[in-house]
Length: 287
Ligand code: PMP
Image 1: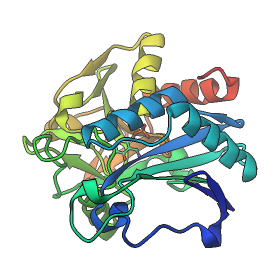
Image 2: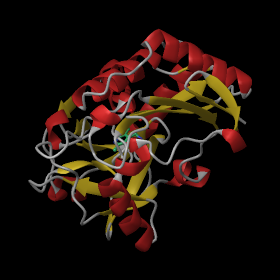
Image 3: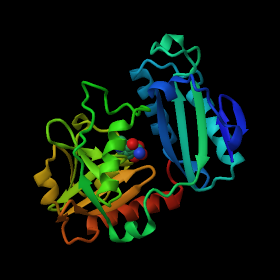
Image 4: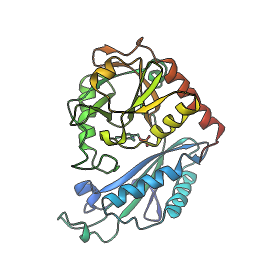
């Protein structure tokens, strides 16, 4: 495997960054997780826009243009023979000293890794998955805007550990107002009485690329979509629940804590959206 770091394609064994990189020392940086389908970078523009917006929010000046990043990603997927896979794009603050001050970091580090990904076992895509509601809350926007896809994933990791402790793969996270925010690494949707519901962007979520695709596909399928605050009661009384993410794609949730969702099997609207999503990928008709 070859990894792209600051303009160089390096063998995996030599793909290393400094221990003084503030991405490592402080989680100071931003990233994207991007799918490659049929050799094409999926929703490249949306990911580039989010990357640059995340960087701007933390006053990180990405040292190369989005065109140069796109070109480097193509080079990296080509070098690794990736047709269907996943790109991890990281921009860290760069090498500094042992103080917090980002001004001491001369140049941000840009890293591109192209690999395969299988987030959840394939059986779960047919049968649905069980999740818990984590005690760990999603970071509130007054602390660190959740829309920034930063290298600080500790609160999501704590939620993920709660899920693992409970013997499931994922955890739903609430915000500090007891409202549903998202899963540890995915956005969340509910279906109630034929209506597709998802927490609004100000509920403390990452504004997912896949979330937007699902909103658009729902409209195309003639389904009503509402972005509104949702609470634990809404989850328990939902007919369907599913998660969305670049790595996860669309996956049904059939159990939340001790409650079966709907019939306890993936719901029909979830399946329609999964099908529409797969058709879009298969068609290659995406930017
Ligand atoms: N929320 C969080 C916390 C995430 O890390 C991700 C990405 N893994 C998502 C939502 C989904 O975003 P996207 O559809 O852009 O991958």
